[in-house]
Amino acid sequence: MSTVRSAAGAARLHFEGNLDELAADLLATAAPGGARSDVSQWMTRPGILRRIASQLSVRIAADTDRILAVGPGAVVLGSAVSLATGLPFAAVGDEGLAFGSLHDDERVAVVSVDEEGLSVIDELATRRVVAASIHLVMARRSILDSRPAVPTFHLFLVDAAGGISVEEGPTHD
Image (tube, rainbow, N blue to C red; front, side, top):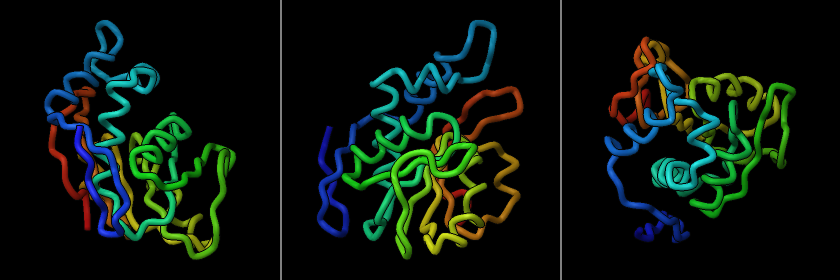
């Protein structure tokens, strides 16, 4: 484990580890006979959740005001990334804001397990909240063909069979 300082000087914990190993751990959470990682399984494993939060946190810009978690396990993922960054968080569920608060003119980093994080961009504009970036744990290859208006990053790509490959980087910037 090491401490990384953001441009603003805030300490962020960063757990060393390689993404190939993390991808293997995610795949190990798949149901027997299934190729797809089970979100409810890996989010309940502190070692996996901590490494995912760490990987996402070092990619979040220093001028970000809040983490906004969206989709499956939003409160769990949001709180883990919040702890790793030292930033407050809010979570959005199917019915809207489910946890925490958003304030006018805040710059938020949207975190999500998958592309569901892209669904909140239009709603944020109506709230006068700026989506500074989107950080996905897993993205399908098809997302690479779309053009989100916000810089979007991913850790892993998921193929049609549910396999995970390590191809971290900007989905679009």
